[in-house]
Amino acid sequence: MNLVEAIVDPDNLLAAFVAIVVFATILTLASPMMRTQGLEGRLKSVANRREELRRRSREAIAQKTGGSSIRQVDSGLYKKVNERLQLSRLLEDPKVAEKLAQAGFRGPKPISAFYFFRFLAPFVFFALTAFYLFLINGFGLPTMSKVTFCVGAMVLGYYAPNLYVSNIAQKRRESIVSAFPDALDLLLICVESGMSIEAAIQKVSGEVGGASIELAEELTLLTAELSYLPDRRQAYEGLAKRTNHPGVKAVATAMIQAERYGTPLGAALRVMAKENRELRLAAAEKKAAALPAKLTVPMILFFLPVLFMVILGPAIIKVQDTLSR
Image (tube, rainbow, N blue to C red; front, side, top):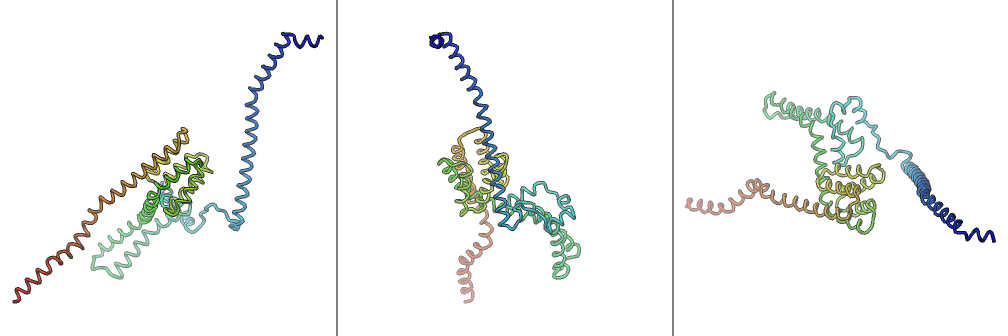
């Protein structure tokens, strides 16, 4: 009876209720810390698993390549000449890596090759011009004029590598820009269907390869950089620098802002796709508007003389016949 009375006693019931409430409160406050420890352990195990998979992947690649590394290492003739003559300091260009990347040349080897040919080209142009003017055909020019032409060829040889890289970069940019609006439409469809941005970009890179191999290459590189770079912003900024086009830069900025502020990526991609289509249409209209001015010289040189011959030829023949009679 004493036990029953103690259980049904209001004071004991109140004390038990308070104890249960306090225990539940302490458990609720402590549960996040316990979950954090479990989450940290899971993240650590996932990181260890990721490192193990990377190690196995590197080992498999090393076996396929015969033990050689896939990292680009510059140890050829260009690098040796560059180090011996210190061409990178003599012909220093702070934007050479960016220019070569825009032309599709990445890694240390193209940089060494660029400095090598930039050093060698002036002497080659000078020697060829001097050999032709002084030994083969001087066109009756005085010696001072020949020397002037040789010096001009030397200056042209100094800028020839830059012109070559700029030409390659321009053609690459045109190929990327021509297919970029269609790629944005495909990317918008993939994102709105529920795919992640990495999977969507990888899917689009495979689909757009038939229209532009350069754009497919850039999108594949963007996917790799999104996976391995510590900051995703660096990957988008790298794409903008490699393409060097206002439309691509605007899309990269929109993606950075969408990830930073959490804005819907689909709406941003829809607006960017529309703007890039308008840019492509404006570029086509600009070419069409410049066509009459470009056709002026061919018209004067080729079409007008033939037209005059067709119109005035019969009249001249008739006048000659009349005078001969």
